Image (tube, rainbow, N blue to C red):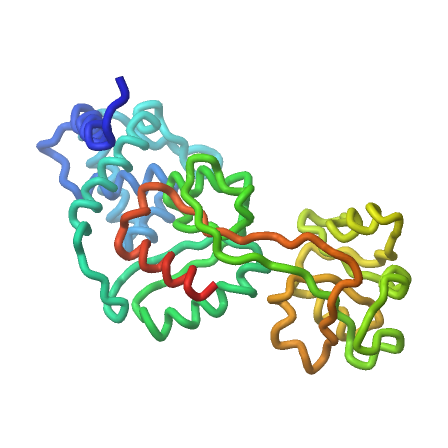
Length: 316
C-alpha cells in the first residue's frame, strides 16, 4: 500500500530517532549531522554552519558517541560515510525539512527583512542574460538575501538538488531530472553579429555572404566546429566556414567586434553591444531554445524559496 506523504515523513523521522540515543542529542546536533553528511568535510560543514572547526569537531565527537558509529571516516580526499551514515542521510534530511516546513508554514514574506541564501546553477550564458539583472534587482528588493552562482553541471544536477547543494537550476527543460519540478521562464532565439564597419556586412546579410564569411562557433564541451546552425544549413544543402571554436558565448561579441568574423549568438547576449556590433536577422531559420527553472519538490512550498522563484520568473 502506498503511504501518504505525511505518513512517509513520520516514518522517516521515526527511523532517525530509533537509531540514536535521544538523551544526548538536540535539534542543533541533528542539523550539524545533516551538514556533515552533505559536505563530507569538516571544514566545509563548519563554514556552512558558521562554526569554528574545533567546535564542529566537538559536535562530531558527540554525534559519534550518540549513534555508536564513526559516521564519517577520514579518507585520501575528505571523508567517506559509514554504512550507518548512508542509511541516515535521506531520512534525516527529510525529517529536518519537515520540521523547517512546520516552523515556516504560514510565515509572511517581507522581502526587505527576509534572510535567505539561494544557490543557483546556470551556464555562463544564463548568468549573463538573466542572473546578473536578477541579482541586482534583489539587492534593492531583498537586501538580506545572499545569492551564490554555480556552473551548471547537468550530470550532477540530480545529486546537487537532492542534497540541497543547489536550490535552483536554470537550464533547458530536457535537462531537468525526471523527479524535479520545473517552470518555463522564456524562449530564446539567435541573432547574427558583425562588427560595425565590417567591409562586407552593411546592415543586412544574405545566405551567400553568410556562408562565405568566417564564423566563430560556440562548443560548450570544447573543440567542436558545428552546431544547430550547421544542421539547418545542411538541410538546405549549404555549408558555412567555421574558423574559431570557443566554449563560452560571452567572449564571442568581443572577438567579433575586433575582427571580420561573424557569429550567431543568443539575442540576450547582444544587449549593450549596439555601439560596436551590428545585430542582424539570420538569413535562414535557426531553432531557438527554452530556459526553465528547476527545483526539488521539498522547496516547492517554502515561503522564501517560492518568493525568490516567482521574482525570477517575473523578471525573465
